[in-house]
Image 1 (cartoon, rainbow, N blue to C red):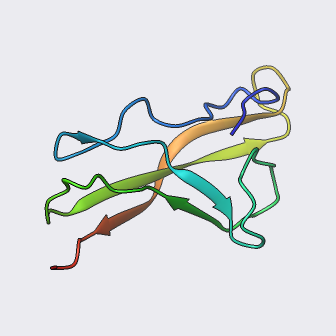
Image 2: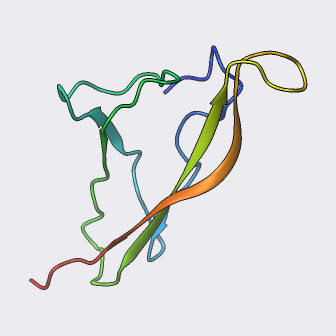
Length: 100
């Protein structure tokens, strides 16, 4: 993802861990054609998939991810410029590894 045209924070969290095991960066693809997501566009909704390969040493504990959203304003109140504003929790995903 890119933040070249907007002031929002784009990219991946600096470090995500599962039971002290670091995860690699996820693959983010568009559901409509399985193309990689390279940028976000305001006012155009996209269904995406975020795919993390799990570490081989992952135990059977749960993983909980919280996803945040931002609001796009074409003209903000301070500078009159377009921008992504505010962070708010939008969804929580809890994943449980099935027994082997």
